[in-house]
Structure formats: structure tokens, C-alpha cells
Length: 175
Image (cartoon, rainbow, N blue to C red; front, side, top):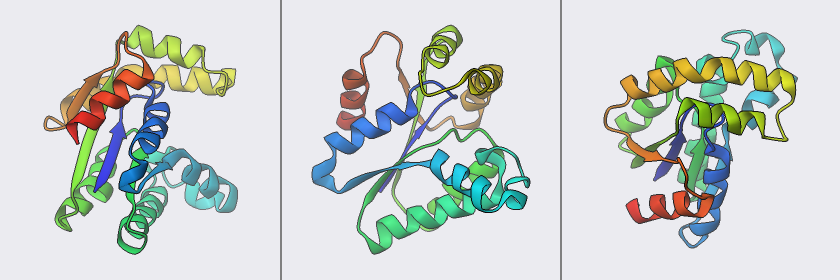
């Protein structure tokens, strides 16, 4: 099974996915941080990174993530928990549709919060520098809108006023 932790930039996907890995360790769960593969592509093959300059619309990044996920659950019997904003039709085609056609069990969870809450989380995240904060804040509105329209069958978790533990435990009860 693949667990997709989706949502707009800054909603808390990475934190939730890491907590789920901890809570589901007895089920061979492994957290996959999609951003790491994007950074690796930029560092190792910048020309390929230019083919869609965001991880969610770069075919090479999506193919790498797909390969990593297949390897994790086929060769290593892992349950991948991947945090990624699936905010482009290419994500759906290259990832969700691909695994659905292969009959891979998946749970697609979209974390939600009010725009103002997400902006505040981005601004208060010590990992993001000012440039990254500004870039991500400018994308929040359209990402929220896209996720509302694109995935009607996804499970939606409202993160407003909830602790990390509460959110992760809510997801565990759904699995």
C-alpha cells in the first residue's frame, strides 16, 4: 500500500508523514520525502530539472519518485508514506493513475487548512528561507483550489487547531 500525504505547500505534509512512519513502524512503513528527489535532480542533472521547474510538473522527477515507490513496496516490502503536493495533472497521470492501473492499493489523503493558517505555517517554519517562503506563499491559493477540484475521492483531513499527534492518529484510524 502507498499512503499519499498531499496538500498545499506549508500545510504540514512532511511533519505528518514522518509521524505516520513512527506510528506505523510495525507495518514496515517508510517515509519518502519527494522534495529530496527534486533537490537531487537539480544538483545532478540541471538540464532535466528545467523540463518543468517544480517537482510536481517535472516528468523526470515524477519518474524517479515512481521508481523509488515501486522499489520500496515490490523489492523491500515497505509501505511507502510519501509527502508530496500533487498539484498538477501530470502528478495524477504519472503517479496516481499509474499505480491504480497496476492495482497497487493506495490511500490518498489531502491535508487542509485555511489559507491564512498555511501562510502562517510557512512564515514560521525555520527551515524555509525568505525566498522559499515568498515562492511558496504565492502558490498556496491556487494549490488549495486545484486540490479541491482535482481529487473528489481523496480523504480530506482538516488540520485547523489540531496537533501533529491528533492528525496522525486520525489518519491511522482510517487505515
